[in-house]
Image (cartoon, rainbow, N blue to C red):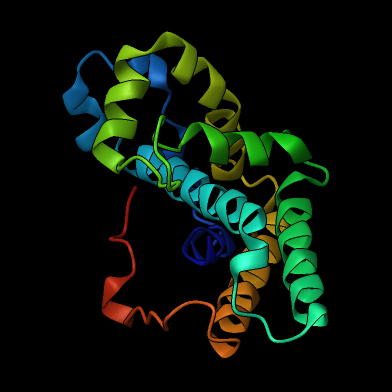
Length: 187
């Protein structure tokens, strides 16, 4: 999300063109790995964050927080993230929870998300799955045209706070992304 925000702040004519693509353009599975890669992977990453949030909210009692106030602070960060994406946008608040739920592997004892390849395949072959994620794709199309920048920036900042908080509380191991791991420049 920080990358999208940075690109939109550059005020490039046409915004981020690859986020303006539509799933209706996908005639083959290959489309998701070539022309549609950027919008597909961006939608997947947002859904993946929502999926982990759903999982952590369900299992918050199992997170190694030492104080009840830590649990409260974590849940407040989750609420701020969802509000950042849903306030004054076409994404509604509870839909963010839903996109996370839909990304989970069905029939597993331990919740885990499907991978990007399965996500792409389901978008291509499963009309109900594709229809459910259509609103997220429309949101990304609007972002590409310059809408919702403040919400994207707020959600990105909150996500970074959430990550730092979980690492500081030793709830998750620290994961660092080097500058070289930023997504490649797209049209």
